[in-house]
Image 1 (cartoon, one colour):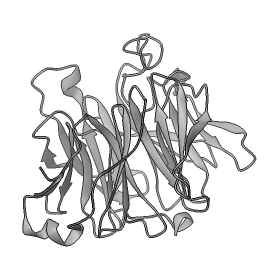
Image 2 (cartoon, rainbow, N blue to C red):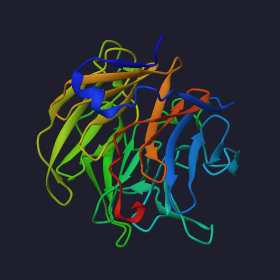
Image 3 (cartoon, helix red, strand yellow):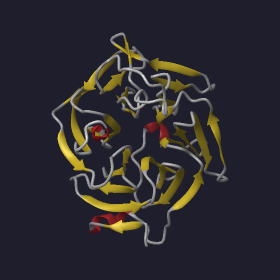
Length: 305
């Protein structure tokens, strides 16, 4: 059975008929947060329960430990200068790895209270850092340390790394999780995995219009997951949303139509685009790292290309 399923003819232009899904590495417990570094042609991702970050070298296919312990790191991305920005469950903070390898804490509290467990993170064109903060890292000792929420809510925050100012920009989701901006940054997509705590709640992605820096408009429903959860996702340069969904990766047209599917065979957590042309889709599933070359190119930051 083919891994690539065409649900809408528009998807055919985004995939390569003879390209096959590659399993690059296995041995993790719950893999998350892939981030690609074009200058070194390598990928960094999190293995949350194993409290480590892994590194895949695209030039020779080798895999090594990037950082251990990692603070039960989850989401990762690069900022506009190409530095690693990381969400850490155990330490309940957002950090940045400087060029010399040192780790700087960017945020660990909101209004004097510790975050729950920062989860996914994106960086806007103005350099601000947006991250989600559900409770998965404090719900048990598996991905962090069990604790009560000090904030008492799961929200999305906007951090100015220069001034240190933090504001809550999304307050209306149960468990905000995956985040991504549209290529023009007029929309912020937010996944809600609240069904993990409220059975029967739809697993959705909502699109929030960006009205001004730090100001979002009323959200519109973008998609409901047909299986499992939408967890992590990214946009390509044309605005398609490529997202985890149960044991598959689904691709949505900007109009909200699900146009294609890549069947992975184990639970998918997150993904990103990489490679010299940003046409290689890297996929973090539960225990393994996969990749698939596609015709689409990922929406990249100026620092990345």
